[in-house]
Image (tube, rainbow, N blue to C red; front, side, top):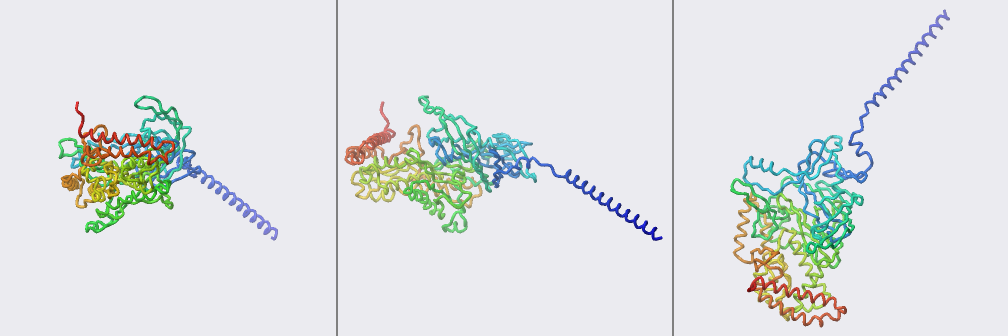
Length: 634
């Protein structure tokens, strides 16, 4: 019996052991099957993962930028397709600043939009020439068909992002390639667009990239050889010269709703953006002009309407280049900020500001077209200039910078000596004292900032002043030499020896009467108007009412021939013959005393030689003023 029980227990134990082994095997097999199943279900590597898996630089903003192995990819949100943008190009560094100084723009920015068709993305240039007012839907539809955006670049889509809200495509050739519209050879440069360039791709590469909420910047080092031919003689001046520039390209997202334009006409001295007007009320295609101006709006409209001084929602800010000579800087800051005096008269507090380059703003880049700067250009050009870029839809100024070339001091030295040395003993020297030269620099900068604010030259401003008033201490103390610093009136060459001692002022005014009027016309808000046309019915009356007084008339700059003798460059007074007679007497006086004044400082005669040529040129200028008034008999 016990034997039977023992045998049964052994059999039971064997069955249990076998069962456990079988369960273990089953679990092992299931685990293996599960592992195999997991392996088979592992998601495949996407095109996005393959493209971007390598560690690389990423800049996140309105468009995410990926810089991989010298290539640049846009991760472009689908929601931005169709939005209007500007693509601009700025010289950041250069091996030849005669082609374009750092800070200068090579061309007008491209007005573009991105579109997606199938597996491709296009950059399209938008035609902004047309403007409609009160037209039918049929006419709008027809204009759209007749003005589709042109394809500027085409890109293959490489991938979609994980949630399919953006596409990725390679834009390297746009930024590291020769694109004429983004060329480093600036039309503002000394070569004036005459350079013939040959791009060297193997010597060019991508630089730093940044992206922000409404703009991005891409830096590129571009290399070329270039040649320059004299257009007059056809002689080759430069042949296959090597050239390298660091360029900053900025892509700016424009507001969906543009700033309401202010319509202008030929009676105002403001830079215009021209449009073809299509309207059911006009029996022709009419040309109209939008005034170029900054978006300047009162932060408290009710307080402004009550006549209180209020800050603008967004002031006009110019950043001053830290590389300027230190002694120049006070004059530069004042040349900018003094414009706030005129804006205060129309109710805006601190509307125009001059600030140093910020050191704690990671977004700041003087080469980003979102920032307006006063730039120092160490180059032997005796000038300064102040161009601007606008929103082509409305004329709103988006960027404006002044380039101050180093030899602007040479220009001031020449003008002050030839025009005022007869009356001002301080300038009878090789190196004019800082108190005189730096006030002249302030005036030059204020003039250029005026361009940046939208004002053209008004060449008739000085012609409304009686010549004899320019020898009056009381008159010149109040009005200076002209009614607008946007004139080319310069310094008081009518003043005679001894006049300064009597109190006659020799310089232009801080601002003239016309400058005050121009700021009032261009920047005073018209809050009651709902459309540009309603606004123009009001602002055009301002011009009509003011033009009854010759002080408020605009004289256009003349380039090829003098048609209007009242609108000449470098002239003074209402009688060119009388003013020039005074000026010629002064030149004779200066020339007779040139050696006595300058010999001790000019041992090699270089200054006197140069100044003699400047005196002759000034004499020719006076003769030209007379010629335009009296003509010649044949």
